[in-house]
Length: 242
Image (cartoon, rainbow, N blue to C red):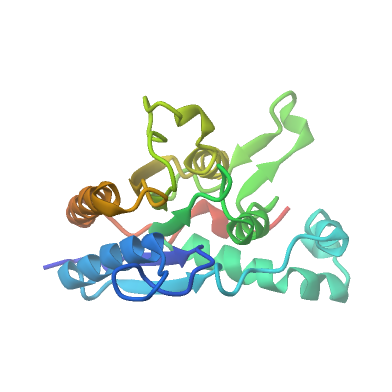
C-alpha cells in the first residue's frame, strides 16, 4: 500500500495520433508510454497522472514578445507580458508539480520532434526552472529543480538500429542526448530509457525490438514504482521569479 501519492506527467510527442499494434500507422512511442502509465496505474492507483499531447497540440513557439516578457523581472512586467507567458506558466507549473515525467519521444532526423522542442523552450525559464545572477561571477546559472527529486523516463522509437550507447550509430542520437542535456541544466538528472528500433526494417527485426522494449518498459515501471521514495511537490522551482 502506498503511503505517498505521487504526480506523474505523461507526455506524448509523436505526430502520429494512434498506437502501433492497435491503430493503422500508429506510434510506437505512444504504445510504449501508454504501456508504462497503465502498468504504473495498476500498481499505484492513487497516484495522479497528468497528460500532455504536444505531438497533436504543440505549444506556441517562443517569439520576441515571449523573450521580452520572460527576461523582464516579474515585478516589472506589463499586463501584456502575463498574456505572452500564460501558456509557458501553465506548462512550467505542470512540470514543477510532477515527480516523474514519462515521455514518448520519437526520433525525427536524429533529434527530438519540433513539437517537443517547442515544449522544452517554454519550460526552460529563467527564474522558474533555472536561476541567473551576474553576482555569482563566471557561472551565473544554477538549476532550480535540482533538489526536487524528479525522475524522467524517455520511451523512444527509431527507424534504424544501433543508436543506444555503444551502438554503431550512437553518435547520431541527438534525441535522448538533447533531453538529458536540457533537463540536467534545470536539475533533473535521473533519466531512464527504453526504445524501439528497426521501424524501417519491419518484420521480425521490428517485432523483436518491440518485445524487448516492452519488457524494459515493464521493468522500469515496476522498479521506479517500488523505489520512488517521496513526493517532490515542494520543488525549488516554485520559488518566485527574479
